Each structure stands twice: as structure tokens, then as C-alpha cells.
Amino acid sequence: EVLRDVLAIPDGDIPDCTTGSFSWERRILGGKSAKRGNFPWQALTSIHGRGGGALLGDRWILTAAHTIFPKGVEELHKMGNHPVRRIFIHPDYNPKDEHNFNGDIALLELKYPVTLGPTVLPICLPDTTNTTFYMDGWLDSKKGDIPMVFSENMFCAGFLTVKRDTCQGDSGSVFTVLDTASGRWVATGIVSWGIGCAEGYGFYTKILNYLDWIKRIVREDRL
Image 1 (spheres, rainbow, N blue to C red):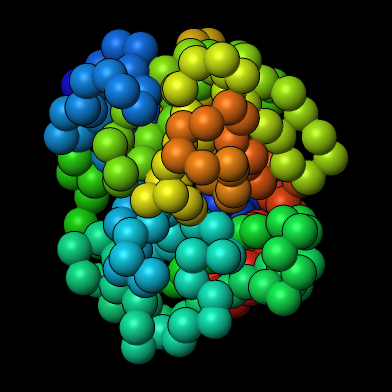
Image 2 (image 1 turned 180 degrees about the vertical axis):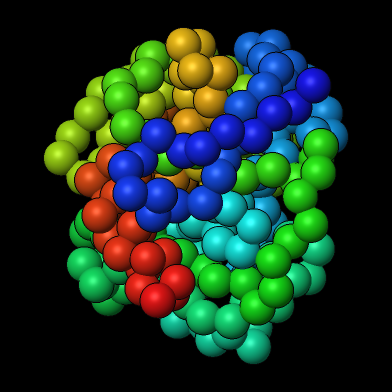
């Protein structure tokens, strides 16, 4: 049974998120496809071909800035062609600097709330250090265990000698961990960039460093 619980971030700034028992076989690029409902927070963007994102609450999508910039709202559709009301791109993101991926994070406010159910549920945001993770995406929608190395605003994950990583269609999808103590699925990273497709390490925006920005955007919308 899928349960919903309050996100463990103070002041109630972010909507409810998902707890529950989802299938967690170890799979990633080159393995078995994930089943419907394995990643109920996953969103599909229809910009530049394919891209991913994650549902926060019932009307926000968390994604990578590079998947939507510089397109406008009229070209953006999410979660079964749900129209987007507003786009918020982090001010540190510079699309003209191809060597600097700081701030590769964006929030999309949907015009109307989505209907939540067993296969459409929001992801949680991080508040503690987690260790067991899965990467969900649209290219193949795989899962897998990968060693992690952290940096200031990003972290990289992958194997140098094994093809087990994300690919181009996964950009904007989230890197998730299962907090076994609370049962929450937590988004800790956003697929940002990598070398080729499933080659060596992939690089992810570290969501923890942008929590204040996320909470501020959502809080201001509620005022």
C-alpha cells in the first residue's frame, strides 16, 4: 500500500511527499525496464526531444535548467500534457557557459494540480544523508547501485569500467534514495551532464544545496 507523509522539512514549506513500498530490484542502463508505478514521481518533458523531472506536491516539477532553457511556457508540457503556468530557473545557471553547470536546477509550476494516485505521487526532498539510491529516467527507466563522490554543488556517480549510468534522455530526472528509517523516497540529485551515454561517471546537481531556493519559490507562491 502506498502511503503519503509530510516531508521532513520545517515550517511546512513544501507539499506532502511519498512513502511506501515500491519494487527496488537493482537495475540501470543495460538491465530490465522499470515497471509502471515504480517511479510515481517521474515527469516527462517534451522539450529538446525528451527530458525528465520529478513531481513535488501536486503542482510543481523539479528538473534541470538545461532541459528547458530558453524555451517558454507555451512549449512546455508535463505529466500527460499538463500545461505549465510559470518557470523558475536558478539565477546561478548560465546557459552560455558550457563548462559551468552550477545552478542547473529549475522549478515548473503547473497551471492545474495533478490528480495523485498509486502511479502519480510526489517525491520527497533531502534532510539527512542517505546511502541507498536509484536513478530514474525516461530513456530506459533503470535502477542500479553506484558509488558516489560529492562536490560542492554537484556530485558524480558511476563506474569507470562498467557501462552503468544515465543517458541523454534522462536529463532532469532525479537521483533518489530510500530512507529506510522513515520509508521516504528522497530526491538527492538531478541528472545534469555526463560523458557520452552510460560512460563512466554521470554528474548530478546536489539538491541539498538548493533547498532554500526551492522553499522560497514555493512559499512565495502560497502568499
